Length: 125
Ligand SMILES: [Fe+2]
View (cartoon, rainbow, N blue to C red):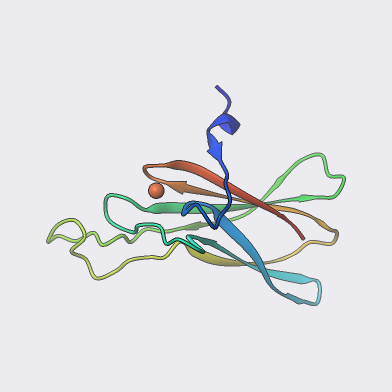
């Protein structure tokens, strides 16, 4: 089995796991993008079921290899000494990245749900 066989994608409007990428703005040579899981349908965020992280990758036009742009880890899901989902802190699976890419290319975001596995979304920049 290849890892790529286990990475799912779908229409984000019908699926709560897809890490949707949106270009927020350009700032000179820099691009600022937001990546969010649950854009249309919120994903559960409980001690038992949560989005653990989102990775963002870039592949420039004509490039042979993809590059890892960054990772956002989401650690707080209501854990507490009082028990599951009794905590006061919940991280949301949403992050922004600022980077300088000197040519057009593709961005790919991959998210990981602790129950439903890996999901991806791709867009041109
Ligand atoms: Fe899930």
